[in-house]
Image: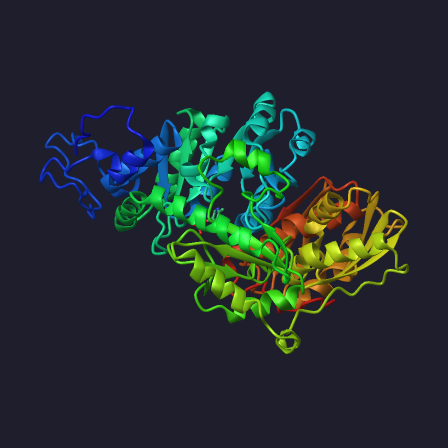
Length: 581
Ligand SMILES: Cc1ncc(COP(=O)(O)O)c(C=O)c1O
């Protein structure tokens, strides 16, 4: 391929529509060919004069979409990935275990889940803050340890804005990188690199492709530097690469990016304005509305529109949201966003465990339909009857043993119920909350080995939402530190393991044996055929080891001698032994 002679002064709309104006040298085709070949001919001397050897890092179908996205974002280089999640996780996995990262409280839920379930157990210190106020980022920075600040703006699905330029200054002063998930605004509306971002991440599945038929991700860098090289190595070597056909489809979608984003932005604003004063809508969340708390920031950071995503909160609450979603005809009830067709979703129920999303919220992805058809559809869906609300079955709420009825206790119970309890239930346990003054006492039933690793996270979430909380105390399963404990010995360790740990593990079919205790080093073996499960390993390292160290302060090391390869039964599944002792 050759790049047509063309001035840099061409506008981004033109560059997108013409896919950088490239034509195929061999055929003069103006639509680029697809390259399914996985391998390339070597020269007689063994070299690769074509510059390509193998498809994984080097398929030519990536070249134009990568160059086009880098151009649109104003970056130095771009890498495509097999999904938005592959792109996002590549950034975090290019950090080092022990690094501290600051991420938004409100962000794409699957990434938040991955950060809590995988990245935390892999060794990243993940701290969630409300990034809509820069002061929170500045306060969370740990000099010398914070390596990355992540923003998503507007943030899915409540559409708070974060100030990219201000966050970049704070991150750079601390020698950390600023990464922005630009999936929702796209470079049509926001170019984060111009505001100081180091990396821009996309779920290209959404607006960039735009037709709900490709799963893809991308990262654009402001500079080619060592960290970029690590990300490139991760993609090419670990293999989170896009198929050539998907890359080809993605480029086709990107050619119409501007008219699609512009039109869906305009329609979203029309829809938002229409429902702003609707009797059944408590609030429309859309940065384009003047009453959005960060409308001014949105005006500075977004040009030509505020995007195609908005949410509505229903005055009649959770049941009304579910009932309204059930009644739409033109909107499609489906997850995802950024396609040509409009979608509606009860976000909290899809996010499930630990969602911070209000249960009365419906997320709307506005497509390319006529605005009047979308408005009429939502209007009729909102005309549900009271009977329809009674038919909606809602999940049970938290068991709270709060002694007083005051607002503070209720707030704590609500945060536990909405943000913490689902995660604990996912790990087979449950939670009760007692509030005394500013101290929260949590009784967590279930397997201590699976739940102890959640303690810091639980405290962090509670203190994040309710900064007035002074202390959070835990009682987890059968485990309570015995202050009268003997010094560590074969006998006291065996007794502790059998009394406090094995009863919970037995619900999963597992058992821990003390194989040796010498020189302050404890050797343990996990048996029961469930020891092959990744969660068993996490339980031993982060749960059992923590319990033993808390009980016997002189223990220096806990060594896992388990034959994890020999495991055949899943150790962990939500229904298995939930809350069992
Ligand atoms: C803002 C945002 N970032 C990242 C992702 C993850 O992208 P993918 O589904 O392509 O893996 C999504 C998916 O919905 C998203 O909405």
